[in-house]
Amino acid sequence: MRTPIAYFLLLGGILFSLGTVGVLVNRNALRIFMSVELQLNAVNLTLVSFARLHNDVGGQVLAFFSMVVAAAEVVVGLAIIVSIYRRRRTIDVDAAREMRW
Amino acid sequence: MPLDNVVFWVFAPIAIAAAIGMLVTRSVVYAALFLVVNFGCIAVMYLVLDAAFLFAVQIIVYAGAIMVLFLFVIMLLGVDRIEVRSERLWLQRPIAIVLAIGFALEVGAAVRAGVGLSTHAPDGFDLLQPAGNTQAVAEVLFRNYFFPFEATSILLIVAAIAAMVLAQRKVRAVTQAELGAELEDEPEDVETEIEVTP
Image (cartoon, rainbow over all chains, first blue to last red; front, side, top):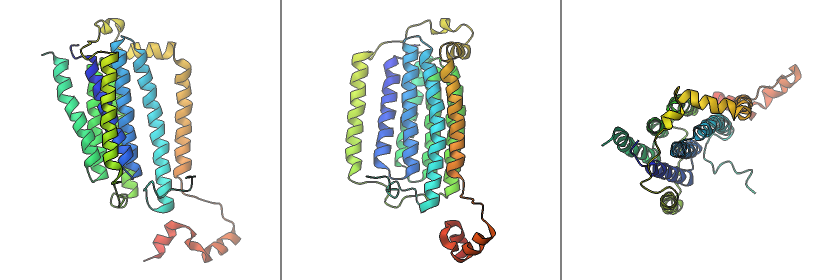
């Protein structure tokens, strides 16, 4: 493999930054959720890159676990979004303000 | 130019462009589809990084299951209804972009200091896994991380039950007396309210 491993890490960093912008800028709960998925994927890419750099499969196993947790998180998160939508007919995150101080 | 270099320089710009497209597009459905493109590009990156098993898992779990779940929820809620009217926060946008650029530069500096911009991955990763990547992952998973692996199965069951509990409509067992009382103050339930309006 002739591509420097740093390129993959930089790609992961750029994707993570873009996901951060999405989380900070959006108000739509679904869009925020998609941006969080982007961030999780960027971190997974970084894990797999380090696994390749150190010739250790353990990093790939950790990325696998992270995918499992992400799948569980998406299921619960989307269910919460659906139930919030049922209750107040919007998925604007500013609308759900009961738990704010 | 070696093949993996070509693959990287083809798919990395597509991944970044898809991420930017996800941020700027107006439609939530397009955002989800851009995200599918991005996941596919990351899957190709896994292939370049000799992680064939994660390539398959990425396609199946992310591009398959998770994005179908997203599109299903978008469809369930109705595409035109879930567009938040004041979509973007105006003051927050430049601050977020500046912070993100700063963060990306910081990651770049950290990678440069920690790994080095021209460090190549050492050869011999395929020698570690003579029977293929899947078997190598399986050996580490079931030898060293067996207990966490079993714990994830509990996590998945809990998540599935939680999703069913959270997303289910409130169905109460009503007695005959309650039924009579409920007919009078029906508009409690939003769903029936909609049916009543026409």
